[in-house]
Image 1 (tube, rainbow, N blue to C red):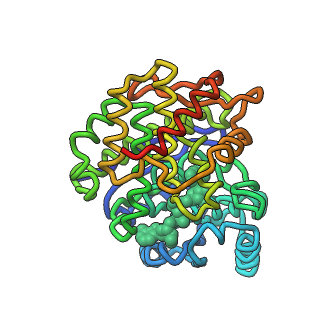
Image 2 (cartoon, protein in one colour):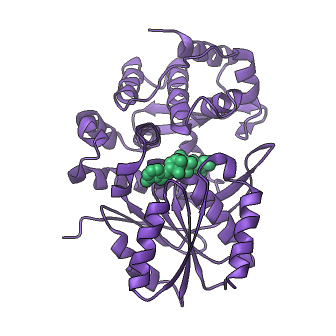
Length: 367
Ligand SMILES: NC(=O)c1ccc[n+]([C@@H]2O[C@H](COP(=O)([O-])OP(=O)(O)OC[C@H]3O[C@@H](n4cnc5c(N)ncnc54)[C@H](O)[C@@H]3O)[C@@H](O)[C@H]2O)c1
């Protein structure tokens, strides 16, 4: 029986399928057959996802394809132009052609890096993604944003470049560390908070089984979360129509917190979880979210093991300064994503500074 969840992402450069399932590497061949004339495949992975790249290589070689693999060290520190150049040289040595297919097998670091390489090598070669972290499945693999970091900042050099497919094999999450898995739940819960109250109810009722990756329910739940992001980016591919910005719920505070702590204290999802609490307090303060709903959000995040407070001492003024320099500033005020109830979000660029400060202070008060 086919228990997969299939989603279609619509983009100006063509539509692509996202296939979500359990132990589904054998389905990759069927997907590749739909891409014109592919005869060679280049798999990029890192230390954590190498075992999956090797497994895919076996599957594809049995089908008669020529497969080459390249593995980088793990970590954000390697998502840079030096690694890009190393891989360009490797592709050049192997005489890669435009109709060859580059597949990123791994988390968001591998996905962003391989997408950037695919977008630029020979002015664009075929590209596919096999995400192996929860964050990469529900977030970074959907929407075509690819980038690498400069010393002066994250994701400063990049492009919109859509993959030809995304294949999410949930069974790969079994080897992910507890902390990375927990961090990924933040984006899953975020999608429910901003778009789908039924999904949120479902998480409230089944969080224990979901956290254990219960096979009977996990494919459809993660599938639904991916679908929510896919629908959003399909309707606002280049972030110009006011839809895609809603995905930034919690991110204004999260980015500032990550930057203030030099990306060493928090995984992205952990910072987003705290940021979503700050944004919920702001939503409550402007009168669009009830305190009961704020509490439901807090309880669910905590049930997934996510932080809802800033635990270390941080300088509030510095945090505010960093937030002011965020990319999402409109006419010098922050364009906040607020919740108008569980399952519904909008933006507001007239939040009083006092309310921002009191909301940040609530993140620092111990219960
Ligand atoms: N393009 C986008 O729209 C977008 C959105 C959000 C985040 N991102 C980017 O994603 C990156 C973060 O991605 P991430 O959270 O997946 O981190 P990551 O890619 O660094 O992976 C986390 C760790 O898990 C390991 N790993 C991967 N899969 C594994 C598996 N199945 N089993 C065991 N270990 C495994 C990796 O080796 C790494 O050590 C950041 O660079 C961020 O900028 C991009």
